Image (cartoon, rainbow, N blue to C red; front, side, top):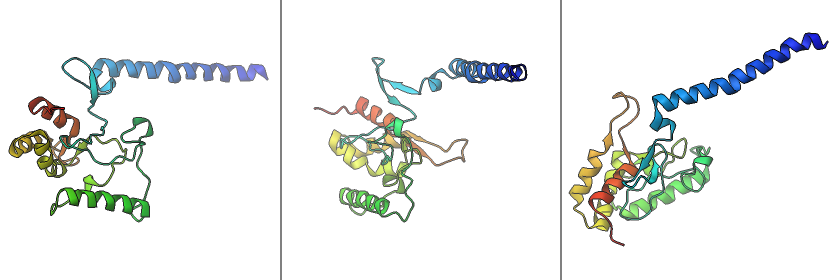
Length: 192
């Protein structure tokens, strides 16, 4: 019986080493060599080399002088270890109430404005670092007032940061919140 099992056990061990160790190490090595920034998490560093975020994972910005991201369903605000959507359907009472509360707060902050959908809805992963140009532009007045900056210049910085759809047709135009906030800090630093 052992003589019949030996070839199977040897094959299993070989495939375990090959597919469980050698293949992942080879793919990781290729990724590190070909795409070092992406394989390292697409980290964003400041002028001193300190990591300030990632191009791929949103962050919570709540001060009035910053562009605010979309709501996150990932843990306590953009927690990468809790990445997921809320799994609440469009008729879920909790989801409807949260979106209504968020929309009411935005209507109070921006009277008469059309509230973009991404201002009150979460992304599929809960970690989206981008917002729509409409939501970014909506926040320009608040940011300009908090930074004592001309609204037109803040709008210009937002418009300059708009990224087109991938390949010109995949997805929607978007604005990376971290990129704009870093540019705002460089051009119009906040005091205190």
